[in-house]
Image (cartoon, rainbow, N blue to C red; front, side, top):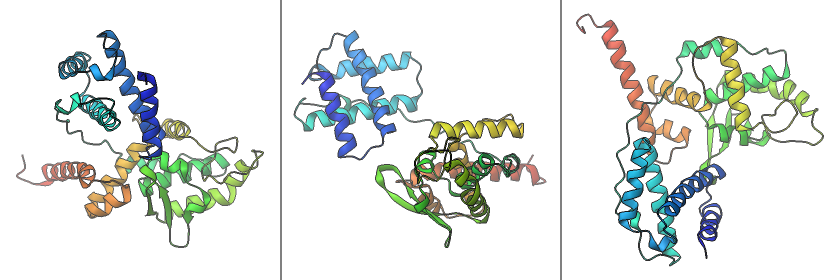
Length: 300
């Protein structure tokens, strides 16, 4: 097989055997194509000919591009997995990326919204219109549950249980989890489903079981969600950037600030490793320090 065929074979493996999402596979594809461009520049015609010195040269090129340590680590990790697959298929004899050390990641504290900022957002939608009802339900649910935007767009009417106030979330790697939601999200969802959603659904020729619909009655996309949130920021006249992930960060941070157990937050967020959730404790520690420095008479 040539390089392109081998890559296609690998992407099929990620989709079928590993259950990776389309977004994850596309990111892998981008990294491998970037490395193949490097191979072409260095006149390396086969994956078998990739040596450790070639890998070192590639890492030097990444450094010259002034990429973050996190980005470099992700590229190395992706290519290491790819060559591990090539070894399994007996296409190469060794994995040159196994010798490459991953750069230590910078500790980036997640950005979140303060409760006062969120409060302004919760009052910008016109609840007398179908789109306003949808936007309110979308915002309330994202903040109430901390789910990813991709998970939100996959929700169907069957995934909501109003009797016990939970949603069934279809997460990464086809893993499922139940996440509760509170009274504000309950009321916003109920209003949207009973009124606005029916109006939007009437604009489409075919029935759609997806929870959140666009103005044409079709399933709302992740890009659509980001656009809606940007519009809400403009209406609230806030000079901040908002994304669905920032609402997820806000959910986790506020939960921990109010004393929630770290493992409970891990379960709600759908994190596989506790270490991924622990980054939010740094935000809480920073808040504790800020409150201390502001209020303790001998802090200064």
